[in-house]
Image 1 (cartoon, rainbow, N blue to C red):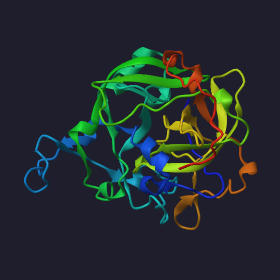
Image 2 (image 1 turned 120 degrees about the horizontal axis):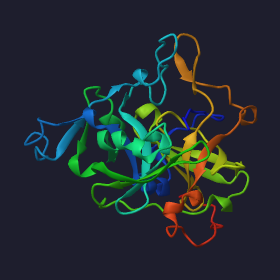
Image 3 (image 1 turned 180 degrees about the vertical axis):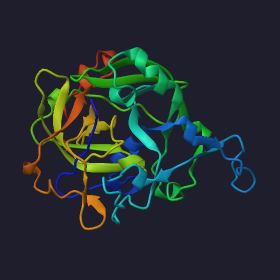
Image 4 (image 1 turned 90 degrees about the vertical axis):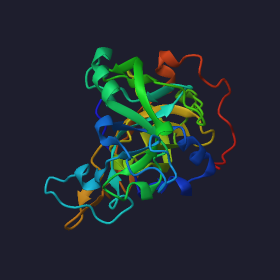
Length: 307
């Protein structure tokens, strides 16, 4: 499945440090998928930065317009992400000490697990990519070596059109970041509040906090949502807003969220009335057999607090 994007109503992209505290905690377990060729050792590290020379790396970024090109090569209008660099291709999140979950199509368009080998070897997963100031310099953003993880193996994989996920074993355990709690999406009801965390057009991590669950999708492992998503959100966790437990993986939106508003590209207003548009889709977490035994046994909390 190939992800697209959609904005329902008002675009509510939120900086991680401005989101609810519970969402900030979850964001620590979310990583960006970055091509290894973008990552170089920072030779300026040392006495000037306080970092050992072998502990700091530079990820080369591109102007976000390179990720968000229009047919007429129009620039982006001024908005939440227009002045930022971009480097992230997909999103993933921790489900074990060394286990990361993402969308299957992030690794391969094929439905054969052998086809995932190339991206497993040539991409890395990087945590802590939420600070905008790190992305503003197109020469690159700086990361610490302890936040870089390689893909050791792909344990389970599906990209069949009715199921879309990849379970990855990283090259080592992730310390200081917790595996997210998982629960069945079958517990959700129409319009239950959900949210997600990802990298819009490959730029710094953002939260979209005001999504809604819609319904399950017959004859597939997906469910429908109404939640703002963007390119590079593929693989992002879909979370129950009341419990902060993962119920799914974002796999597909509906349309390009940018449109010509008079000489520049801005977020589309075609779905300002959410009833004018269809739904996005997510992989149901309980349909992934490789994750059996990792689910929360308690039912949904009645606490409606989002903090």
